[in-house]
Image (cartoon, rainbow, N blue to C red; front, side, top):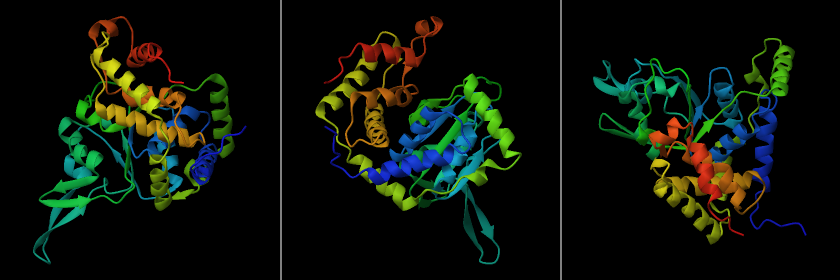
Length: 322
């Protein structure tokens, strides 16, 4: 017997499929990456994207922004970037003999930050308030950003010269940290064929808007109503609490990590066409919601383990709810 959803998520699922269809005009493979980006978008969270140069991190983010009828801005982080270059600055207007505030590029709906780890801590701190509270306080002025507001930031994990490690408080403001890997051989052949077929045409021109800002906000409200059984809530908490006492971890996940896991699991379920969360949804989002919120013990790092390895050990040790 086929299950009937209690919530009407047909429109949401259709929109998600249309966005994927638009992105597939240019992006080859990367199905998980795209699913996770859409999950964060529906869960109203920011995303940190990590990967070596040349694997379409920035391109995918730009293409995704083109499927939304929203404002878009791109900020290239550099070591000499100042907070005022992001937030804006007050300029004296001689005609009216008063200071006027000129808004910076952060005043948009969809903000792409390239190489976020190239700016120093002073500039990083400019993002704390705006990413968490969707507001900016500067020169005694207060500005609320127009929703939706999402930050997609990229960083290169290999090149360390001229980079600055993101503060823990900054990392915690990202709902996901997604690691993007190289394509396999078949995907890379398809990439070359598609590039050859385009003959130099801008791939951005192939993408058409799918949903408006209002539709996105409506979808986010719908995602919040996705049904979550108490057993699933207990399952999430069991995993999070296990991170705080596991011998392989110096720092475990916070309650904010629990909330991020819950919200993204609900969004992930909606993308799959379901109005309820199952354990597999939690498992799908867990590594990306937690890998930047836990810290390994030095001994485990020396043994070659990473955060995802430890999370897998923890998940395997906890009974899956039935």
